[in-house]
Amino acid sequence: MARRRDVPDSRGFVMVGLGEILWDLLPEGRKLGGAPANFAYHARVLGNRGLPASRVGSDEEGREIIASLGRLDIPGEQIQIDSLHPTGSVEVSLDHAGLPSYRIKKPAAWDFIAYTPQLADLAAQCDAVCFGSLAQRSPVSRRTIRQFLTALPPGALRVFDVNLRQDFYSAPLLRQSLEAAGLVKLNHEELPVLLDLLNLAGGGSGSKAEAADCRRLLGAFDLELVCLTRGERGSLLITPEREEEHPGFDVSVADTVGAGDAFTALLVHHVLRRTPLKEISAAVNRYGAWVATQEGATPPVPSDLLADVV
Image (tube, rainbow, N blue to C red; front, side, top):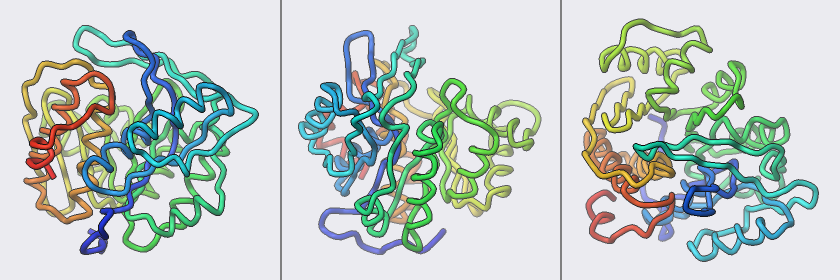
């Protein structure tokens, strides 16, 4: 893997969630959402300097997002204000197992994230950035994400959290994102879609076929690590040298919204610290499973759980 900073400063690593920020309109009410905000929240809970970089409207919904970030102790200085476009929202419905489906409104302020001097300064300090496909549905935010990735210092971790949503992705977009990444995280439903679009599809089913498909992805894009999440079946972590499979934890699911983002934040935290892969695998599965037992993406995290997974 690329060289990382050996010891973070007193604020931990600088971990940026770059992309959409919005309201999740859940059956029980409205909650702060968007993978970048969830990632930043959990990065901070884990002792790092987690920041979301996004854009909201100059409307009541945008002001409430800024206030919500403050209540969660998440810095809002990289949240831009848009006077022309509304704050984003997504209607989230949950099935009987707590698995979400999404209807994402368009356009939204986060489609117009600008590459500002402040964002450039943040890129220069960044140890890791997590970005996805959804925020790249518009050319403005897509261009900003590419500029941010180009401005990162040597050794910074570029994390592509695939997050396929509706029809807001294409083969060229996915290919370019993979080429820019060092670490890729996706789920078992996204893997065959991604490989098919990239003409990398393998054959067969089951754990061995999934591992072979992940290795195909790893080699095609010269990645440091591919992380495949499998829901109740746990996860698979693959590097050029090693492979680590975890069966997952049997928990009572409240909803899975944000569980994957918590998983990603802890994964990045430990990759930056160069934690052994086996330890990473156990920790991220435990943490993601716990978040799935809670309602919402940013629950208060018990100190005893943190002591076990950090």
